[in-house]
Length: 113
Length: 115
Image (cartoon, rainbow over all chains, first blue to last red; front, side):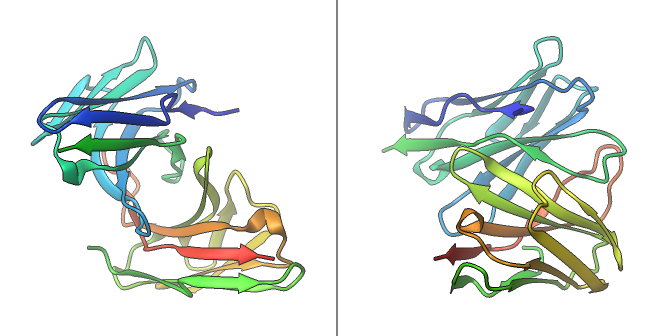
């Protein structure tokens, strides 16, 4: 069973607009969430994270929102740039889990100039 | 960038042969992980290590074994490769695992094709 789900395989937005990537999870024990960005032929790179004690974390153009009651998180990119075109993975972990991450399937973002 | 290398970067092998992938880090991080990436599945944890000679299974460990004899090296072995193990394999490292700090840093990946 997929404990972390990204139900949109792809997303296309215009440069300068907002990109919103969504992620749902089922395990209520998850207490830390991360977003990774991946370019072709490269390893994933850490983007931003959020603890379950918060509902928002911001870093420059990237903001992650967490809705614990809905078991839903989202990544907002504002403004979107062509260089943001990549695959985005959300991941989750639970305290005491030796850091094991459970990843979603990924969403491919295309930002058009 | 975290100092993580993977070797080989590409490999083609035949069904039934053993294969070993190497992950090498220069960060002296305690935790190391092996993932595989497949379309529709994201990244799935194969095995991980929480110290020299300390390893444990992940969610898709069948057909794989690991070893960690030194802090800097984490080896993944496919004992008898099958076509279902055709995938891209990523190694990741993490220095600490505690509340508020679970970030892992990934290597460049190894593309393995089993024919």
